[in-house]
Image (cartoon, rainbow, N blue to C red; front, side):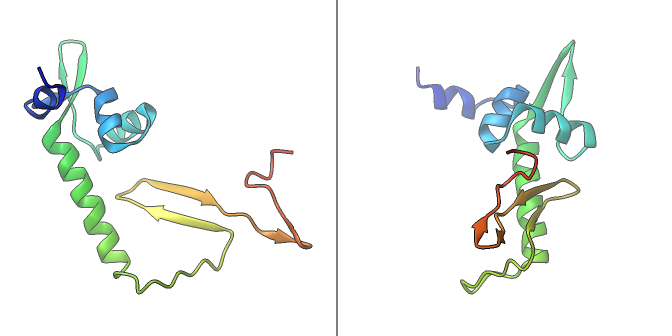
Length: 112
């Protein structure tokens, strides 16, 4: 039987499957569930994520990005060392390399 056929018919998925579908880590899924940004249900001792809540979560992220950033014209501006990607309450910070005396500094200043 085709695996995609089976997974497309599921109403609930495991946190690991939800992480795979969103291309994020399992820990991120648990953080999203704990913050209430991603709905989940308990069935006995098992935690499951409704597939519909994955779609709703992504649609909210897309809506937040459209509200904050109009569609770009191809130009990018990165005036600082840190750039933030904002979701609904959660954020990821990416540190971009900075030139110090003609040498590119490491991404993580603690790493030597």
